[in-house]
Image (cartoon, rainbow, N blue to C red; front, side, top):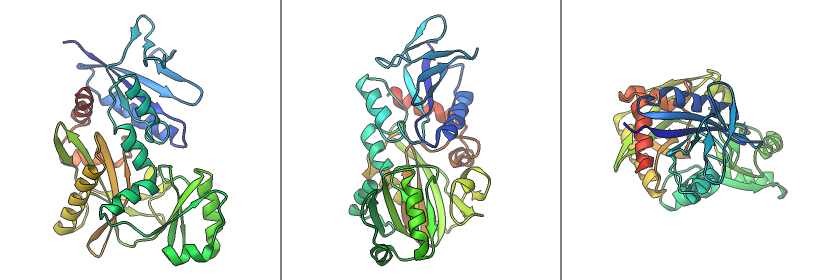
Length: 325
């Protein structure tokens, strides 16, 4: 059998560098090595390198994404994209790979850019009738009107960077006096921020991917935080309980599945996405969609796949075959 060459890209230019390495290493461990040659590629602002098993680094030729394996030049058949944040989740890497005709496993560049920009994504989805929290937008340098913010979103509210992941830069604000510090924290991650009404209810997360033409919706996970909200500590340091399947009614679960499917189709997605909702009074309110969700051992998607009865090896094979088209 002619084994295909798969470059698993990880790292990136954002605060999520280390988290992405964990995801990338899981992918390298579970891709079927009988079927594929696997090459871990670390991408950072300083350099792009294939990390050989002997510890040597081989630079990537950005003209065609080729690299030496120490003896011959490797031209990957597919890039398996596990970068969270820029440039792998915001469309930059996808656009570059598209220009050199290199298949990759995640959403296309426009869909990636749109969904990574929370404000733009919410605008599109609200226009299509998807229920979302009231929100207020601020850009760095603009005059901050506390009264205007509270009038629009009320208290408590969440202050978030517009384009960041893994809950970096997010604060929950309960008193008007806390707003300035929260805004300052968010600006450390992005020059654009979004302030959202806090919706009280059950938080759920659900993965979806296309298997050829069929949409597969994974079991829904309920997130129970030991912190005030699903922040970095809750996501990665064990400060939350993630219960799969979620303890919600059949009707609520069906509404979430319908909404997930609708959002995937409205945004014309491909590959794997994971969407977050808060269910309040039986209605799912959309929070955000991730086009490169975490795949590390602590992450939600591997737990949903296990509940679904699918191995990571089979799942990664589906994503690679979809990219090969």
